Image 1 (cartoon, rainbow, N blue to C red):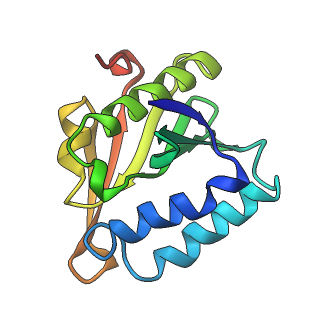
Image 2 (spheres, rainbow, N blue to C red; image 1 turned 90 degrees about the vertical axis):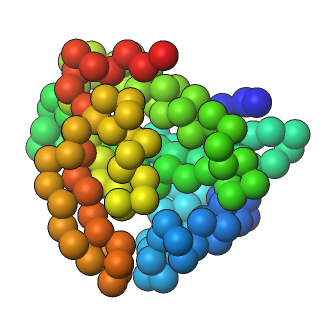
Length: 160
């Protein structure tokens, strides 16, 4: 297993990971948003503000996820577009990729809180690792897909 920065050649593997998790974990409209993010990354548009990584196993994209630092919140980092390809679910890859991202955040912005938004389907994964729910918005992403805003305090960032 290798975790490395996203490259334009990873585009189709990341889209396959998204499609394997749709519609259970992602709403229809989110595919266009995700494609736009990958297009921007492939063209170097977000390289200064977004850090995006892939997990590669035997030349296959097994997962992808990123983080960013909000311009107006110097002590905060945000997690974005994390997903594990369906065939790699429940193998610990998501936890390893999350740990990798948290370590990178700690390295680049020590003392930052980490925020994210996710659904009712994924929030228990983050809660188990120390994130706490700050707000729930029913049907935010689509009917039946609620938004859970979560935060991880700087003192909790070490995940084993």
